[in-house]
Amino acid sequence: MLILVGAIIVFASTLGGFMLAGGQPLVLLHLSEFVVIFGVAAGVLVIASPGHVLKEMTHKIQGAVGNKSAGRTDFFDLLKLLYEIFMVGRRQGLIALEEHVMDPQKSAIFQRYPAVLGHPERLQFLCNGLKPVIDGKIKPDQLEELMTAELDAKAAEAEHPVHLLGLVGDSLPGIGIVAAVLGIINTMAAIADGPEVVGERVAAALTGTLLGIFAAYGFVNPLANRIRFNNASDLQLLRCIMQAVAGFAKGLAPLTAVEIARRSLDSSVQPGADEMEAAVKNLGTGK
Image 1: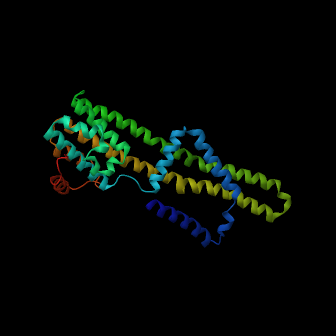
Image 2: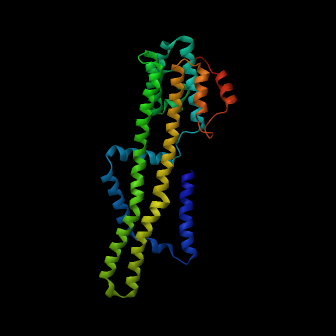
Image 3: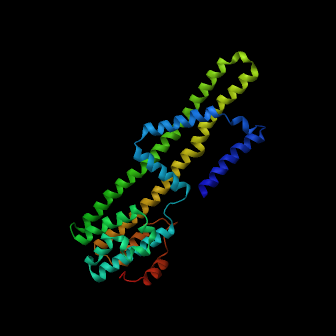
């Protein structure tokens, strides 16, 4: 919602200032400039990136516009889920976790937390972290290193759409200049048609420069930055999983492992200590 509010502010401020100075909005609408600028920008996207990155960028843009970043409720539910999982492992033995981790869709515990169950990346990261704990194939100290490597890979992958949007944002002012130069070429070809025609064509050419700069600094670059914030939120959630699972694997009590993860969170999404303790006291054993 906030991103739409910001877009309205950008449009209203730009057009409002232009109209207050006596400008007419319709003189900014030159289809040829839009075709050149956004057509070239689309071509830059296709040239600069493989198909899977374009697909991921589209997904990230939809998430940014829909404000689908991890919020306080997501973190709170995750911590409660981790506590329940750890309590089953503590009371019934690690082997009891196998039925939950190997098929989380049928797990009574996971079904209580759709924010995790319905998010494949979070679910996979959690289950991949718990499987070595159940199998006992690696030492607890090695588990954290393993999960850190996976987290670093995910962080690098998440930045690809951001870099791609940044490239387009940096290119748009130059693309606007290209559109303006093309407009000036047309103007020179029509210079014999009189000052009125020349003035209209020069105005159209300048609109190309305006449009390129406006799209870059008013929308594309801010959108890339919003996606970067969303990525940071998602990675913080995965890091929360890593710290809790690694702590539990080292022998920490379930509540202590969850508390370490809770304290690592930003204040905007961090549940209070008393709130967390009160919540977990009412949780079942996950049977």
